[in-house]
Length: 388
Ligand SMILES: *Cc1c(COP(=O)(O)O)cnc(C)c1O
Image (cartoon, rainbow, N blue to C red; front, side):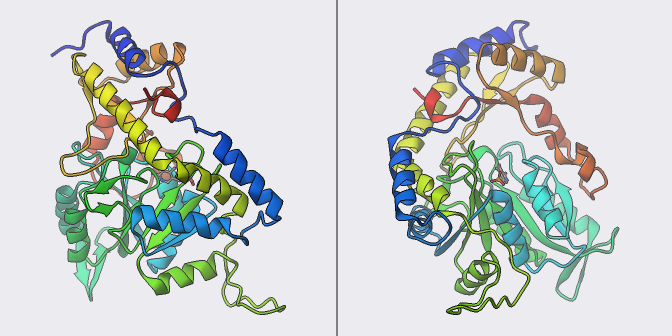
C-alpha cells in the first residue's frame, strides 16, 4: 500500500488528539516533592554520597524491581561500565550489543577496553533477536575450552548487552538460553525500562548485572544518574567498593586497594530521585494512558503502525513509537519536520551505531532490521506533561 501524500498532516492530527498539546520528546516532571526533598538534603548538610538519601533511593528501587542489590551511580553509562567490569572483560574482548541503541551502550564497552560487536534486532521486540543471534554465533565462532572465539578476529566474545528498547521488554528466556549455550555473560541495559516487566519479573533482574539510567529524559530522573542491579551479594559488595575509589574502611587512613572509580551518586541527586519514585506508580499509569490514546488514534491512520507491548510483557512505554510502512528517509523527515514545527518533539530512532565514525570498523552481523527500522521509526512526545 502506498503511504498517502498528506501523511505528515494525518500524523500531526493524531498526535494532537492523543496528547495534551505540544511538548518535548520526554520532558521531566518536577515539582513540590522534588523541591521538598532537595531542600531537606541541603538542610542535612549531606549532599555528597554520605547521608540517608542514596540508601533510601536504592532501597526503593530494590523494592520496585525485586533486585536484591541496587547501587546508585553517576550515570547510566557508568552503570554499564561497572556491569562490564563485573563480567571480567579482558582488554580486546568483544561484547555483543545491538546497533539499534543509544550510543552509551557501545561507549561503555569501549570504556571497558573491549570492542563492540554489533548484532541485529528483531522487528517484533525492537530488541536483540535470539534466533538470529544463535545462528550468527554458530556461523562465526568456534568453541574452545568453554570460551566462544570469533574465528575472524581471533578475539573472545565475553558478554552480550541486551537493551530493552524504548521500554519494550526483550525476549529474555530465549536470550538467556543463547548466552548459556555460548558461555557468554548476559548484561541488561535497562536504562529505558524501569517499570517494564515480563510479568512476575522486572527487566534488569534476568542477568548477572543490569544498568538503569536517571538522565533528564528517562522515566524518572535524578538530573543525571544511574544504578546497577544485581542479585549477587559478592558482586554488589565489589561494586560498592570499586565505585567509591576502592577505599578500605578506616578511621583516618586513605588506603585504596585497587584503581577505583568515583562513580557514586551524590545524595542531592538521590533526593530528587526519591521524590520522583514517590510518584512512580502515577507516572506509569499516565504513560500507559498516553500509549492507549496513541494506539487508538493511530488505528485509523493508514501506513502507520503503533508499537504495542509484546504479548506477555508489560512495557513502561518510556518512548512511544510508530513505524511507517514506507522505508524512506525523505518521507520520514517531512513528518519529523511538520511535527517539530508544530511544537511536538518527535525524533527518528538513533542513527545505527555501525554508521557512526567511532564504531565504523567494529565487527558486526548483517543488520537488515536495524537499517530498515531506522528509516521507519518515529518516536512521539512521551513525557508526563503531555499525557492525557
Ligand atoms: C540513556 C541510556 C543510557 C545511558 O544513560 P546515561 O545516564 O545518559 O549515561 C544507556 N543506554 C540506553 C539504552 C539509554 O537509553
